[in-house]
Image 1 (cartoon, helix red, strand yellow):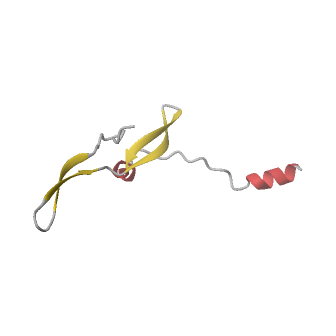
Image 2 (cartoon, helix red, strand yellow):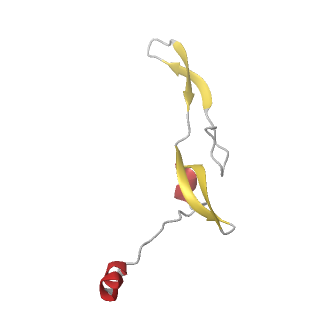
Image 3 (spheres, helix red, strand yellow):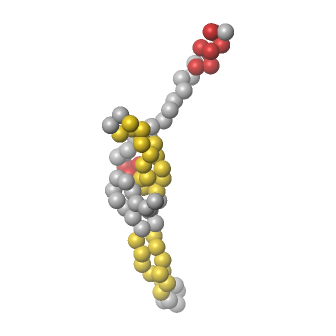
Amino acid sequence: MSRTCDICGKHPISGNKVSNSYNHTRRTWRPNLIKIKTELDGTTRTLRICTQCLKSGFITKKVSVVPANAGAQKAESK
């Protein structure tokens, strides 16, 4: 799996870590990706998006909510 945001395309970048003595060591910066279930075109899909896209509201989470009185309805039917 690629470490790329499905919305904005953010991906790992590489550069140098610079110490106090100015030694250069290669390193990578990875985006903060999370898996989110969302509904697109009537189907539920799992996307890998960065937290900035989630925070900015490009995608809304699909949350399966159980009604608060679901347990009461089962008790009444018995």
